[in-house]
Length: 447
Image 1: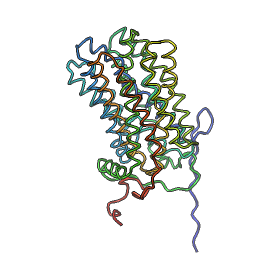
Image 2: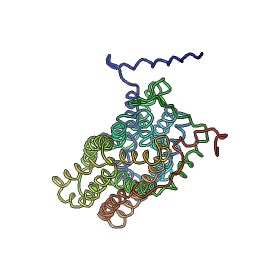
Image 3: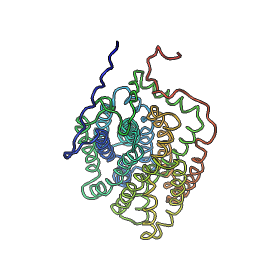
Image 4: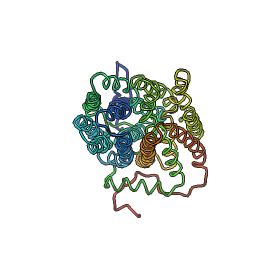
């Protein structure tokens, strides 16, 4: 005779303001603040280009090269960071990343040569920020949420991207009033202040607290923790994706996303505005306004992703972005109505592409693999950002303005809109089982 096992009772829910709250929302809140704090340094390229040019005599092409290094490492560290999170946990990796961002930002105040700018601004901060941002948001959303996953991802993505823009007026004011070094130091402090919060409240998985993901009503078994080399796991994710036509379509469209946001507008809109006679603080305020509209647009995008075909959303987002960029040179000639119109439409679209892109990645490659596979897709995003940052700097140096850069980016966005409609349309052969990449013991491989 056998006796039925008694299920272990679930732990009591976390209580905030006297009300029960699933701990997934606590993790989401900590992640939001983390992404917001780490995004401070992501704001600095736009406000430091002109001061560095004036103090050191460096050309915009030279400064843009350091920005490009940052953007490349910001992207390519993503899949490895996702593998490290699988192996060592989200909390440890996030703390290490914040320390890198803080130390790199602080040391930037001591630089005197272009190679130091490339090392600190490019390499150190690029690696630190790359371990967080969209990859962290995708990992947390997919581990902790079943219901409301798209909405949470939209809010987290908005926190990361909007933080870059909302910080701009403060940083620009610091640059104008007491110097660019104080702006760099402020971003370092912002990143370091988040470390104790992550150490205290961040948890790696719902199972660590005896919970299931929010909205998971089934008694699902938690996936095994990865034990393989994180570098090997990251390249396993690349091999998984590279065999799929959809992976290249997602990567190609996200390449354009990076080129038309971080690379071009995030890096060069303020210098372009200064070229048209606008004060740097005013131009920074314009980017901050884009960030405010981005909160609305990206949060709404997450909500819509839970309900509509992500391909249709991407068609609308890239199409509107392309039209906005084609209109931007004319908007500078009508700075009031024209720029307001650009800020509204472009701001609603700033990173609204992220929730549907992550959703498609999860559908095509499995929710357990989404962190690493999306990390590689995000690497393409940052390659596009790096290419646009450098190309726009070269175009400005050669031609004296940014008009060709804006027109070229607008056309690319329209091409990306067409690309997204082919994702998932062709018959796909099975790739690999839907299991965590490199998360099974070696003895099980090939069985």
